[in-house]
Image 1 (tube, one colour):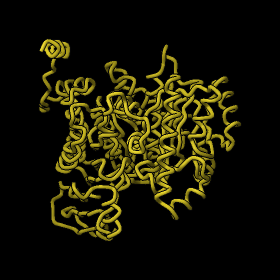
Image 2 (cartoon, rainbow, N blue to C red; image 1 turned 180 degrees about the vertical axis):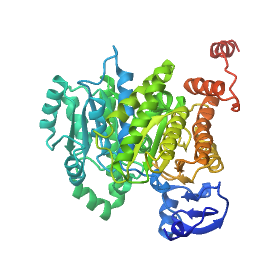
Image 3 (spheres, rainbow, N blue to C red; image 1 turned 45 degrees about the horizontal axis):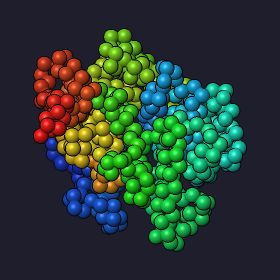
Image 4 (cartoon, rainbow, N blue to C red; image 1 turned 180 degrees about the horizontal axis):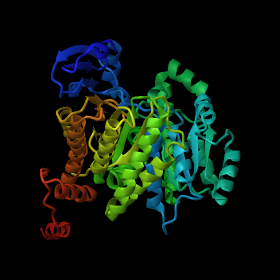
Length: 528
């Protein structure tokens, strides 16, 4: 904080895994802060390495937006979960119906996972979220983020039957282990329409996931006194968890991994989670099936902003500005993206009513590069006219091009490149010289150390012409870098999006793949 308070606009602060290395001379157009977290030589980036080097104080787990000073509280994950549940509902819809009377079962009511019941209500379904920590459940209930709390599984089953029958929109927290819920609902033939899990399985041996059959207190004692035994119990529970999910899936449940390493850790535990080919998982990650093809490939991802004044009136005005932009775009949009625009228009119009703000006057919505630029340009004009104070733009790292994560953000890339990290590195460098106020790149985040590279940015809008120029150049690259990579992987939505962008932007020239005739190739191979 001392460096930030003393620096000039011709200096840059360099942050090494939380350590302020110092202020270095730069230039006005350069980022004011460059942040890295957990950058390791690849051979020293395993989970055990993190424990060792973190204990030495030489590195840290960057997480995602938290490590980039761009965390806006649970609003971001509420929005992302809402969009996920809405689109998951469309995947299982048989006749265009919504989620009325349909049941979503999941687990976790922590800092991020606690968004699930709120998102379920916004999406319009019946949701059951299990949580083993009574304090976390109590906190979410007292905050109004979950409607009801039930601690007896038989009572829960009866309540869910009624909610489904009456097509209620209600969120229920079960105070206990989610495996008990899945098993009881199977016994009582309660149809689970959507299923997932958002426990912290990127950190399974230190409280991220709890074994069934033990109380919260018993588990914590075991974790401290016999960590080897605790690990065994966790893995036994994962095997049992997968077994019951498989049974529900045979009855028609649509289950998806919510990017928390559930599938990965279940496979490591020896659960029956692999597909017949022995390589892929039986169930998709939510990015593979939902967010990837329906959002990221089309350039839609979590764009966010913070009103620097801290004035709720400024936030209300930005909501109106963003809503007006989205409404105009939706009226002119091709069918491939119209639904995403209307989902986010619905979100922004009800955002204040849903009381999303915790701390900073911040907002988030999903937009493509055109939407982000139009909204940001309108903000800058409003600042210029004195209608609002300065605005800081950013985004979640969980976005179109900010993160390389083979089991989450880039899990729907099938050309073999999902285990590479070029996209995230190009993003942070490209944003840096196109006008970002600060940039960041992290090892770890969401799915664990050594499993992901993710980065982000911050950009100050001050109403100046220079801000107009910076926002257009940087936001354009920040999104289209990811679409280009996804289009090269032959993702259909990304090919549509990047071709459309090249038609609108003559200076953009992206290498497109030569698409092979799959039938022709198979016919020749069969003849050989």
